[in-house]
Image (cartoon, rainbow over all chains, first blue to last red; front, side, top):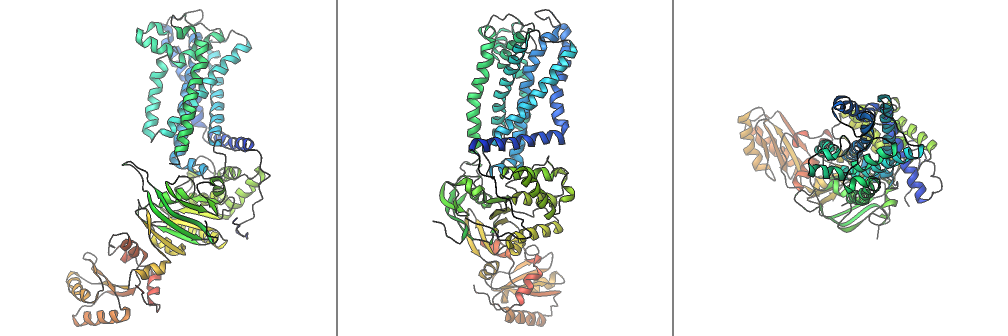
Length: 282
Length: 343
């Protein structure tokens, strides 16, 4: 055991408290990392506020500009139909936040600093997870507030509203791992730009904005099976907002898929992310 | 398997990244750094300096070989190693968005200090590294020197017995360099073992007790800066002339006296002459120049610089006017000392 003599220029450091359990340490470290993100919000509010307002702008753009020309399947205006889809789309936008944070930390050497510390190695990811989920909850609240101002509202009970929120956050959780994986695999800012562009076709090729039945058959089928469509349809149902009676199996089992898709994505991308993180060592 | 007196040991460490885009690997890397000493790891880009430090600091796995830091096996006892090291430089960075103080508190917490102790330690370190005034400003607004000091402070939160310092002064102005050097020296005086990688030979000369020259993934030479200079064999005479004709004439004289190939810089009218017999060679050169009617503008006997040692060992040739021309006054003083070259 090496000990270093203490002197005036090197004040003695208080001994760490008795070691808590492994999980306790991981949670404490994860909270430190989460706090770091919250400090980022406070110091650079611009980035996070833009992240919250971007879906709001999208709602205004699509609902206000195109909404009038789109026939919706039930009572109420287009906003009634659009909002649940937008909640799901906002979860997809969150992927970019995760990916950017992971890529930036890796590129600037912050990830390596964390890896050189005697901290819990899962805490970096757990902290990222907590901060991003919190970010998405605030984003959903802002977006729901906008919807309420525009005439959208939920018609179901509190229980089904909470279930809807749960399904949205489950999708966000799954996309978190996709974001971490791409963020670790991405070699540079080009990859980030590519994903930022690809988010749009993935978002549009879904039941977020229109009924997939109005699309050419093959595109419609792809849109019907999009994980966003499943979550959007399930959330429409739970909020009592108008949806469409799709003919496809996917449309008829939206609730099931709204759980199955995120679970599947997590089952694939969580281990992939862990493997990527380990491969930083090779 | 680890020597009791060594803070860092590496034995036949190998790392092959594979693939055409692979980074600089290691090819039988050996190292021993005694407790409380400063080892300078010197080498050109691509020699494997960064790979070596990344392996020793557990950021990277080795393919073969063994290494220990602070008495713990790098491969099997990663956490114990991480509890005893600090990393400064390009390997690990501070968070640019956070303020200096937030950074230090965060790293303190991650080093398992309780909240109050982390805050207290952060303030101490900010004071010590003259960052107290900028403590509440985001690190992105710091100057290069301030950021490097914050980096250093972040590595010292729990006073690690072993510190890895990577090119600590690259891109810094002279005043900031001095500050960083002073900070590193203080740490060493307090007993920290430092492994310093650098491309600046002056830096190694200034800070390191021993220097290891790395080329193509292995240590090709090792010793104190003085030993390495001696190993190059002999001393050098720098000659500065007033014009091209004199330079040509002096070149012929230099060729007769030199123990090796003289370096001629025709634009600066400079000749660097490796010599074996110190004062005798100096007298002979002065005499012959005088007889040839050449009046040099400057004539100086000095020991080789580490640049020259370095270039010699890694297969390059020193460029006169850059390496040789940057001869430090300290080298001239060293040259005056009655110490005969051994090589």
